[in-house]
Image (tube, rainbow, N blue to C red; front, side, top):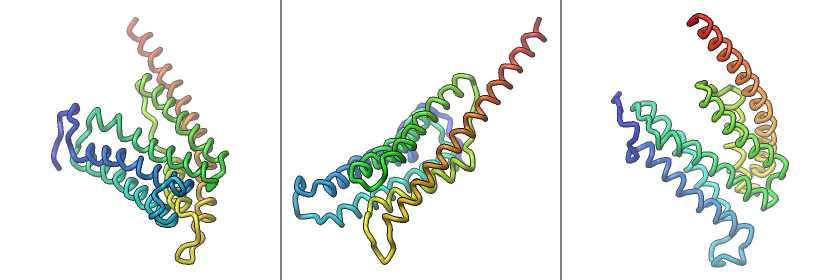
Length: 212
């Protein structure tokens, strides 16, 4: 395992994969847009092919998310740029996909609101934790939520029965499960944050008294 010390470096393999994921997002959005508005496209690409194009680009982007994190951990490559861009790339990919699916009536707007607002809330919570010098570990509920969400989105992108599998119906079930888990995990994270803040404040008061 190699050791990486330059945390300001941008040009490394994990960051390249993150940038690649960002570049994939417009292709996912455009493919879904032309599925919804085929008359505005070239007319040469059938709708079912555009649905699959969006699906498999999304899957490929999700795979890059796994590998950039795995490589960064294995090679101990932790950079400011990667720490900043990686979570943003993930959120851009998921949120833009959910918004497009809602516009296509393939997912209920309520579950999209739940998932998007939860992401905004968690970002704010992590900023608060960082300001207080705390960390919020990923909970089991959060992992399950992400799993169901990342399975549901490509299924909903396909949007029709393929290989005898009702992808749309299964995707709808999975995305609602993800929505429910997102609420539960957000509550769990909030509770953990409150407890960590109380403990941190008590420790500060204790050290202040001891230093007097």
